[in-house]
Image 1: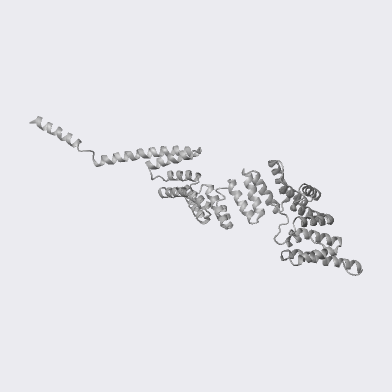
Image 2: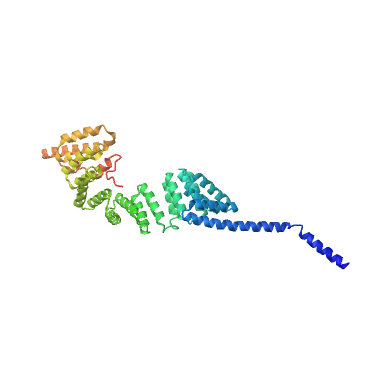
Length: 399
């Protein structure tokens, strides 16, 4: 009897084991497979990243696709896929991948940044700005998010908002030369040359010392009338390039003239006009220096040359007119005035020269009338007034 009971129990155990795994066992097995898939997917994603970093884009795309096939709920995989596709110029597919990255991993900041990059490529600056701001909100430690957002503000014509954004973050990124450089360029675009100079110098001191920053600093210093500082920057630029371009040689000449070294400045301009006789800007520079020196004969020649090279250049008529006033050649002066009278764009120069002509006549009458008081200052025409009278013209033509 006992033997029968033991045999029955043994048969029961065997039968129960043959009935298949329990529900808990099935779930454990599924979870084990899932964990294995995740591990293998992570390994594939790491391999894809390595391939991407060495430029093996096709191989990286296949590897990351294999990772996604094993586990399709990791946003970082889609982020990498989007970057690979972006490098392959598959913009629409890349955009879709970044959107999937946001869906599966909304805590990631990078997908928003790259969505912004794509919107910017498509000239959708408002949408780009929105994505950059989202990226900054998720992770404020990346200066490229800040720079991208500021550049979007600039693209939208909102320079003040860009400045405010950069200023608010200036403490956190105070040692980032690119942030200081962008701030300088924004101020430069607004005509705030002194402020631009300060930020650009900060950028250079933080290590952003290259030819591009030197040229920009020199231009900002020149327009801020910091001619001595500009000469120092031009010397540094010459060391960097080996030789200054004609534009910056002209700038050096004007800086020298503006710091009391008029002869040196004139000699530089003379050399440039000989080497490049068709350079209208060089003739303008030489003319202004001749005017400063009271060399009205050379001033008149510069005016004639400028008119020959560019009939629309206002300095041509201006220089000839001022030279005519000082030489007493009223016929030339009257001829110039008649040419300028019908041109609305040169009305400022017309009035200026007309006043100079009247003053010259007054001086002549004063000389011929013993008891009439003389006021020679009325007959002078200073350069600053003349430059302000040139409507829509930058008489310095400096970058």
